[in-house]
Length: 358
Image 1 (cartoon, helix red, strand yellow):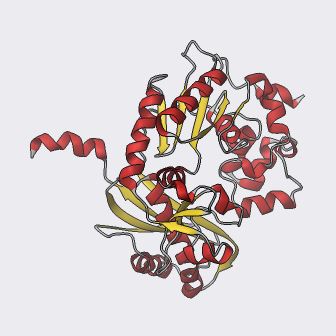
Image 2 (image 1 turned 180 degrees about the horizontal axis):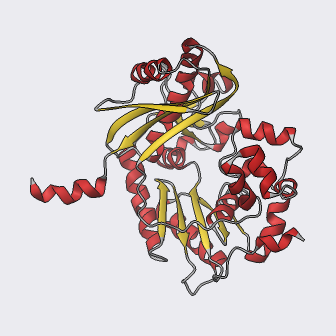
Image 3 (image 1 turned 120 degrees about the vertical axis):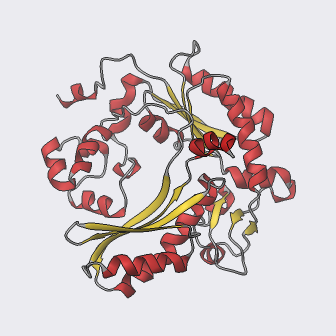
């Protein structure tokens, strides 16, 4: 009976492609150094200092190595891991080549990072599945790099589908297939579900989207607040977000909600290094060319009140975030259930309009 709720709207179904380059930075390094083929390769941190991997190839992932992992931990899991420095000038150049290919098929391209984008090909006369094959083939011939793709009626489904046949594969989910596709999908595949929410869902006996669909809107609202309303749609594969060309994010942040509240400033400070390393890895991969104007720390307390401290003109560093954390914690002294670190970016469009005045 609930299946009627899968109808998204009266609009014509959209055709969305989520394109994701396979281990982009590492793949470029292996392409440019053929002797690395078949060997575990990581790009980012350094052996002789604290750092994190920006990415790694599939050979490294077999050992449990992953993106945003501290270098020392990656080397513990894979001692023969080959770690190479980032070459963002090369990565940006290859990304520009790929973008040029994407724009041949639609002006509705929403880049998410140098190696990932959504395309709305609803208006294209070609069928979206074969179209994705053509796009991936052109990228391979032009760059000698492989891409994976997901095709669906919205961004949510396309994104999930693109992860199912990596590397160098694609999955298409047609509108009428969405209910069955979502039925057995693990709820942790939905965006916004972290460790704490995932554990709560497990306690409720919810492992798949099909399980979640048995809960009413009121049930989800009661258990997860406003996010419960979103979960009601997400577990049904409903996502009305449009593909937004040239979308430029105003900030980048990461956060962690703790299963046990942190009572002291020292306990909060212990959580900073991992959050900081993950943030820096995200910056390196997604926003390496942007100008940072502010850094900030956000705290959510046990009573769900929150506070944010931000400063302009500071480069992101562990010491600077530690200083902001101390100021935020001192405002109330309450136990902390969430810590977030982030940066705000300069408005590129605004800066460009001001240039002629100089």
